[in-house]
Length: 564
Figure 1 (cartoon, one colour):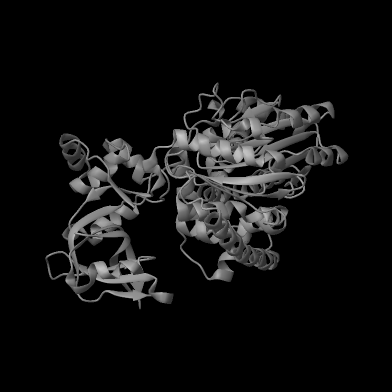
Figure 2: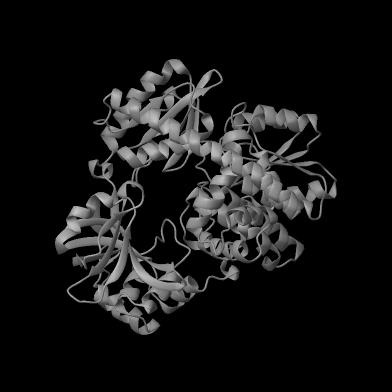
């Protein structure tokens, strides 16, 4: 692991912000590192307000989108809400469909079959719309590259509105409106929204046009927060505001679908991390193992008893998914080792029987193991389909763009993408992808990095510091939980391995002072020899509250250790 200490802000800036906010220089440093340098900016950071959301009509084509929807309602047209089968897509479909259905009945939903249709807008989906007399399709979390499909729909007399957050290609679809802040000609102030976030901006615009208040839309924010967390978009700007209020909804007044999931798991007071690891995998499991429409049905169900039955089915999907991704990950690791690919700049594996629904998870697992841009292929109809994952700092989308001569289609963003190709191009593509990555990646990026916010002494860790840091939440890319570094640490004699096979490390840490603080290092059991016999060591960690037998104590959540 590479330890990288963030540059310390200028002393003058630290002093000024510390005095303005009446906080410690450490807190001022953490804020400055997040681009917060004034009292006013700190107020917005610590007290997110819905009124600080941008005017949705600043987004290119938003006026056209709203006018087309208003016309559809006025003329009693049939509307189809079409979305991707992952968390971002299904939450977006649930959000827009339930909002429109609250006042207009002629609204249906459509999620493509991951296996029969693949990612994005399909000709099958358009034929379904045509067969059911649909006049307008609103696509969410997909469609920005669906030029042929949109043209096909237009010939059938079906209009399109595209709501996407992926990078556009050279040309845009000929839709009635294309909402995507990543359009070069779009000057919307924030371009890191997820697909469900774009959907929320659309209903915000519709509500504004009606003369309604943003407060009317708060019940939909549990969906938006879940999509933000699952899609791993930056936790900055509008995303942070939406996630902040969305978490409040999840914890205080969740929709029946979420309530059913949480009741079954006996989970309360969720954080964004909990959303990522508790709610999101279950919603995703429907599209991975069976069909994304099960997720939409759960998220739009208004009867709690019915939602609980649906949640049981979803839980079965998730259990099946866990077993399958573990099995395929083990097979993929063997394949890498047998092919002696450990010294390559990329990991590219393929087996035609691998389940298409979990190859993205497997790609993530392989990236964690070998820490290099990774592609996992499987057979999908008469083509090969793959999920791509990347390492911090390397844009896998750009790398795929340089290999597109071998690709049928591809899409995604910097750290995650999907693609298809014909089988005879697999070998040439694999060689080209390795060549592109080898010639463009900084070798330093091939080892995992821990970015450290500040070096501190254990004596600086207080309940007050913890209370302030907790107000930095919700955490995510661009606003990660602060990571600290401390040197000259010792275990007070408590160090031991815990968990199955002593996989984890538990300590009671001191720093040249008798006052200890508890520490836990998940997956760091092999570091026990570094801390035994009161050897001095250095540690990087985050702070957390450990609740045990009704007692709350601060502890270090260790990320890595080194001998001093």
